[in-house]
Image 1 (cartoon, rainbow, N blue to C red):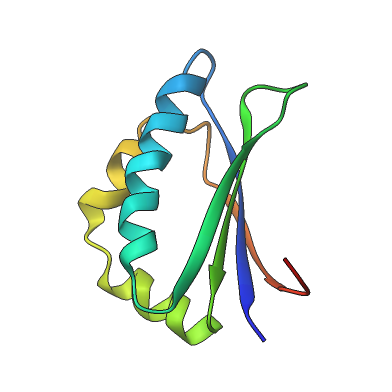
Image 2: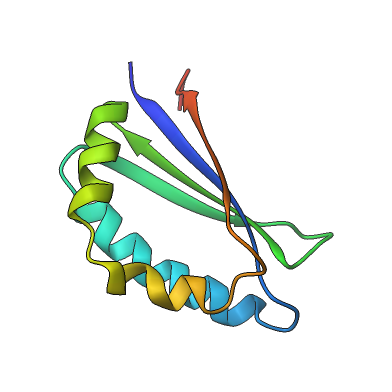
Length: 96
């Protein structure tokens, strides 16, 4: 069974578009990582500063190995426009 890594990310005030663009760059790296089966980015339409970044992985181990291999510069553009650290959790991927 696949696993999802779900991140709740909040943009700094006025930085919503910049955060979406930065996550797009991060997504390119994640998509190419071994074990990534896809991802989506959602923006809350009632609270535009709130985003969900959902990654689908073969396993938690695949996700963790990808994180270890990720160059720090990959996350820097995202971190520069966030309002605090993201909240992340693993979820079982049930269908879809």
